[in-house]
Image (cartoon, rainbow, N blue to C red; front, side):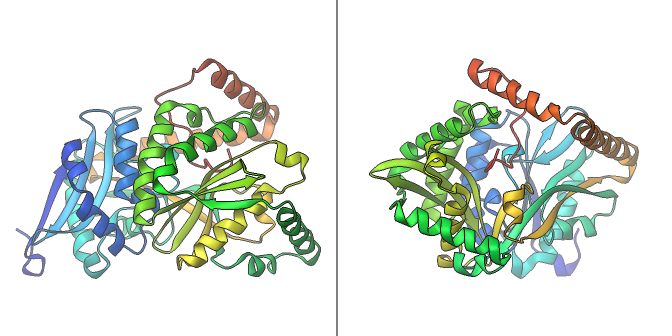
Length: 397
């Protein structure tokens, strides 16, 4: 029995997708009470993801309640390859992972989640990817009584949530002048932005994915973005998230035609552009699409009172011109003490894979080109590894 100060604390394991669906109202309330939560921990995103990507019998969501009130949640699932693992729901198409804790009862929530995860992971290693610095999952890591290991994961870039005029001031003078000229050119073309309403989401998502495919033709489109399950997920999740204020979809129109569509996800302190599609013809008109999109995202961040404008995963050169802060996600490995050898094996697998990928990039620079051609072929034929969702650095790839 827990100590008196933990009186009324209960931990349960949800394995039933229908029960997880029924958690919507209290999950959303907890999501709003967790300052570190990202859009990828919203119930709308996770439940929709499960409908598209989940496997029956593998759902593992740890829930912590005090006197019936939900104060903590760890949305995970079980996989068996390459070994038994508990991994985040949301998969590789989600940029961040975190557990949810009630800010007013965070210590109790973490204690309860640690106990619940210890029971849920009796024969498995917990592998938490893409954990932002400062996330609630760090508190869980610090509390964990068994074996643990912290690794680095994806690099992300972040800007303060400020109007575009302020962000331009961060640049070197000559670059700032060029960006201002690009913005004047966009305005001179009279490209208009339109905020998509909930009822318009299906058509807007269809346009986004169509334009996304066009813009990446011949350059190795991310095959997962072309799959029906991905489109279905985006429509389901975005409709709810837009209604809840956790998403915004913007259409950019030129002479009445939709020439670009951008999807922005937001919650708590954070706003981030997730995915976009743009007509390749905009390049012929010398439109800097990334600058056009960033202006819109900065506007949304300021209007909704966010403090962080995330450029999400990836450190592409065009992002660095804004002099963003580099933030490195973490990969947290947890296991019972008796499973420490298995956790060490998992760490070796992860580090070996990363080294191979780095070596291929360094010594065989043409590999990226051939990978792009292979992705184009998969896109054309509808083939690919259906069980391996594409990287969640999905906005630019």
